[in-house]
Image (cartoon, rainbow, N blue to C red; front, side, top):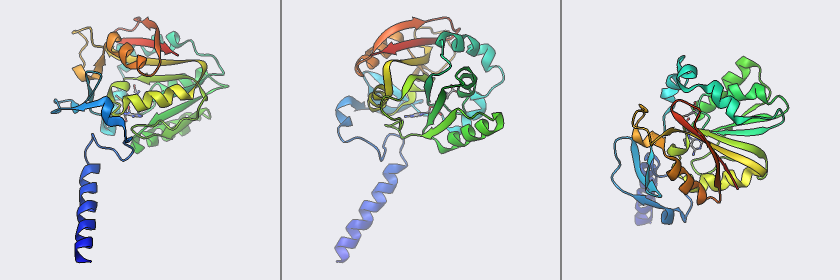
Length: 243
Ligand SMILES: C[S@@+](CC[C@H](N)C(=O)[O-])C[C@H]1O[C@@H](n2cnc3c(N)ncnc32)[C@H](O)[C@@H]1O
């Protein structure tokens, strides 16, 4: 009996240690090991690679002020991004990795008969989203707490998924994309907005950038093809993918 208790205690303690590491998740799908490789983490990475790319560390909620910085609109030309999306008033859009909702709240007024599902894995970001929604009196924004491998979207429910400066942080990119693809309605689009890895002058850490070639390769694994790469933004690609 004593031995049993010791074994139970040891296994409970090791679970606790595991849950504090960024690369290990309770929602880890059993078969994910075959898609990912592991190595020593570089400064901004988690030591896990997918299709040759090291996954970046998640930007914590303490970085919220950077997402909301006043110069962001001018630096990133978010007005041009909004135009490029060509939203219809009835669109249902999932903003995945929505953060504080900087772009969620720019899209919401463009889709008065539709809605934005603002997904994030950090409860603190969900709080920002709820506060922002109340402050602006928006009724068409629904914050959604997802997991590292599942954005918790219903099948066949969205016209567009947009991932702004977020995909490179997904610790289960393959599982995330499979879920997002099943959530798309027929003819739906997936939009990846990522800093250009091809341009050394873009002043962003390497793991937080993505090239068109790498994105295309990873999206192909989820059954998606590149429909258009729009380069109207000063520092980021706007990559449109479809089935
Ligand atoms: C750099 S922030 C960008 C936030 C927002 N898109 C913006 O541009 O203001 C990336 C966000 O992605 C979220 N994130 C990381 N992995 C995620 C996942 N698997 N599912 C949903 N959100 C995720 C992080 O919590 C963080 O809030």
